[in-house]
Image 1 (tube, helix red, strand yellow):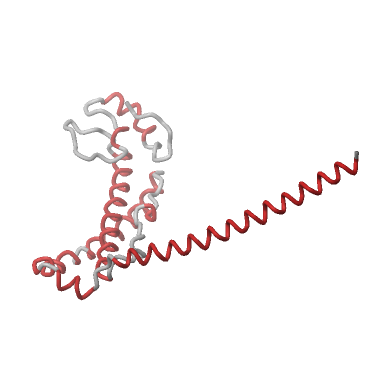
Image 2 (cartoon, helix red, strand yellow):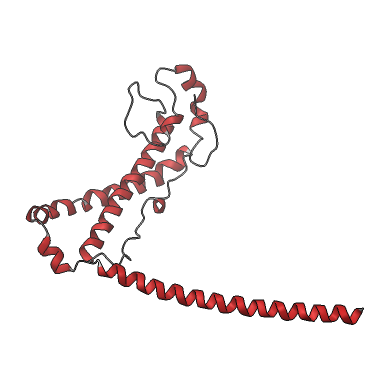
Length: 196
């Protein structure tokens, strides 16, 4: 009886080894195929790339003339970025407001796209920075508003920030006075219900 069990266990080990070998072989084949497909994908994407000279020659004259004005936006973007970062670093700890992670709003992941030329990559960087700073600023401003004045407007506003639904109704003095301190402690990540 014991011999038979030992034989079965040996066969099981042998089958396990065969399965492991087969798995390893398939995994290696998959990795090779994935690398091959990645190269094909990049080559296909490069096919759609417009060369720098062609891009500049195809540009409409008014687009070329207004480009310097657009790129002047770097100045206010950089100044706003600096202000927001200093503002929340100084003020938020004093009020107990959790800081906004700048990195959550500034995402630069388009530079690896093989179908973009140098100018298009720069434009993508510029737009990512400008929109990222705008979103970063909006979140800092929203948290500031939630702390200092979490009251809804009497009129409907377009594109309210994510904190706005928790604010107190316009004219509801009782709810404002009773819930202000509680709301000042509810920031993203909290599961607390809206103010009222």
